[in-house]
Length: 169
Image (cartoon, rainbow, N blue to C red; front, side, top):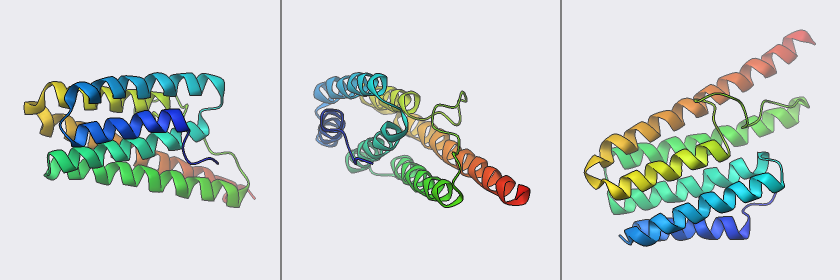
């Protein structure tokens, strides 16, 4: 698994830097570039590894938000994104250990959205945070809640699949 694709990662990390240093116009352009490059990469290859890349870049954006506007909502978003990354790693380990294919990020569910859908929702949320800074606590809290629900739902689905395999054996 490659850690980050150069062009997509550069756009996402540059958006995080622009967001941290209140360069709002540049951050919006870089967020759009990140989503565009992510969509191109997803068309060329499977979405599995792209979903992990998106998680790391969303975590960088959340850390930039926490740097720019410290407080509870930004900290909750950082915690939710780190939970999502931890769950993705643990489910990958469980899948490798049991030798099964767990459901991927392309599930048709709002809560279990991953990959392109989660990246697009995150980019739109960050764009909304830039355009309407007075709504920062509400938008950051909503994104944190959806991210945490997605991580917990994915973990519970993985546990159910692994238990089902173990009980069936």
